[in-house]
Image 1 (cartoon, rainbow, N blue to C red):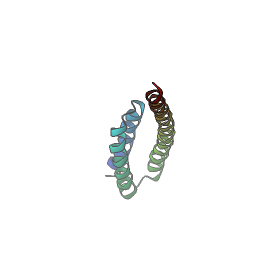
Image 2 (cartoon, helix red, strand yellow):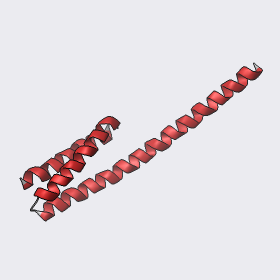
Image 3 (cartoon, rainbow, N blue to C red):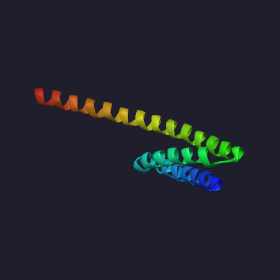
Image 4 (cartoon, rainbow, N blue to C red):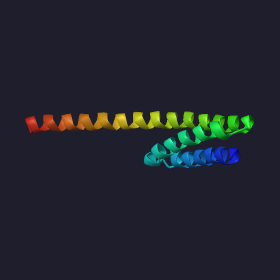
Length: 98
């Protein structure tokens, strides 16, 4: 059972990394939940602390990367919204005086 739960954690992390690379935000949301469940199971079932620690450290690194990518995407989208709002304001002024 311990190998299964730690292996599941590892496989879920790989799938999450692939979703991150393709920026599949819907899959990332679903995989985040799966990772949390896999962590819970591995914490209960694992008797190999080193293997569990290694898996959790890899997952922590992946989540740090995920947070960085999400923050970058958030800034990009915020910039697009600012430009959209500026364009909309410009269109309103044009309509007033045009």
